[in-house]
Image 1: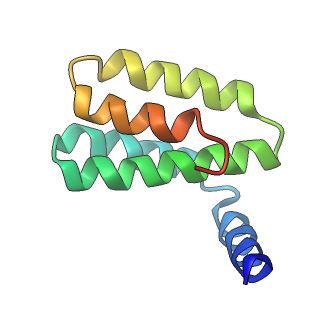
Image 2: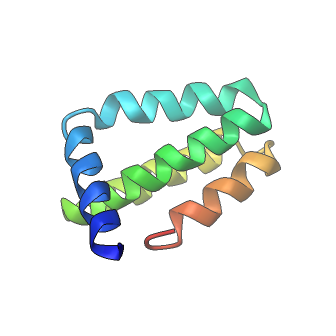
Length: 92
């Protein structure tokens, strides 16, 4: 069951390759909505982008983008809490 889940996640990440810019724009739009449901969705996208950056050995770019998100949304503690949880937890 664990292998199946890992394979499904790998296939999902494969489907995201080349769409990173679009996904980051989606995270921004969801954060701007300022609603918990959208924050949760944004956090899931950030987690996926983190996992993808690990696979592509591009964590420095990921960290830079997350830092920019933190600055732009500094007055949104509910969003920042979700962001911190997924951005700093490998596999989270």
